[in-house]
Image (cartoon, rainbow, N blue to C red):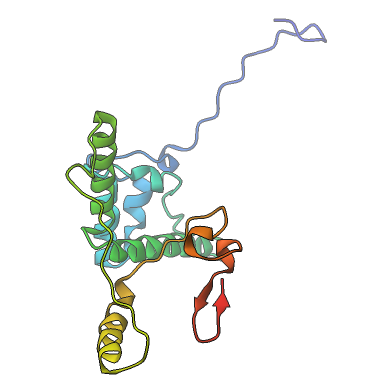
Length: 190
């Protein structure tokens, strides 16, 4: 093609990143950048990274942006390393908080649930809803204190769900549900 001044324009070659800065994965599922960065982490953190990157987890995309460390100690390289350390610390915290195999177990469970959902499998098949029985106490007595002690020991294992929207009429409350008292002694609401 001719440029405006009559010269022929040469095609501009695409600029590729230097070969050593490209994130390429080896057989382990780790890119060169991740592999070179492993020295920043504890042995257990290294294992977590490797487990997340390799099959069946296949989560190497979490680390796609990691480049090989420059080898030059500078505030910039230390900042980059600190971002990596913080990210892996977050992954480690999440891994410890999922009781059924950590993040790898979570990913496996999610894949199973999604496959079952796609196949039309009902995870609640065979379950029958029921209204739990309970007790009413009109006064604080020995039986109340006994039951309260059991309840207090279990409260850390409980979850409470407040369905959003609407009024609390079915709960015997004439205002929005968010106004329900959450603490009986002071009647503090949400």
